[in-house]
Image (cartoon, rainbow, N blue to C red; front, side, top):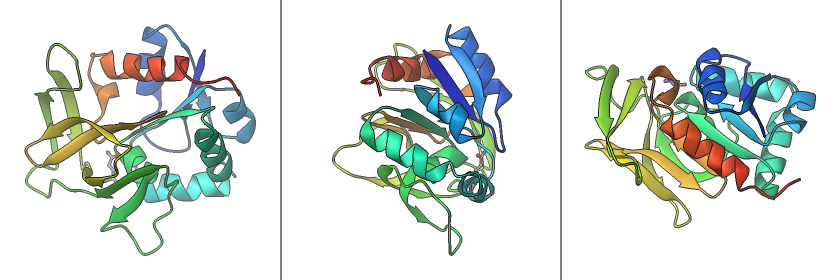
Length: 195
Ligand code: GLN
């Protein structure tokens, strides 16, 4: 079991550390050779337009789409990663580069200036105790298609979702000591059919 963290820009090392603590081999991914060797890929937080442009320039957009559509790659996007995974982005730039993997519409910087960065705990799927999450200029899920399962919501809207082999959170689980979301992603990776 090998899981990659897209390492073109953004919060990479914290994800690598969390994956290692979950007992899986974690590797940075920035080219198609690295990508072909992993069962799962985390798209970290950062700046979604920058990450989107860089993955296009590095020829990663097509291969990520193909393998995730085939079901041989699990993808987990956090924050900017959620924006890249969404099929629709409201308030994006005119040519918002995206992977468009999940049947969701997201709003960028959805919490406004009042709540730009904050930490809060909330119910996540079937976890027994509240999950702490760090939000940094985070997006919200505005709408989700019928194949999408919402895993967590705040008063303002939905902040985590799953669609088969695809997982997304608008918060940063890598910035707390809680490993449960990464463990949840590792389980999705383990359940994939082999490519
Ligand atoms: N607001 C950023 C964006 O639109 C995402 C912020 C983050 O990843 N922490 O790309």
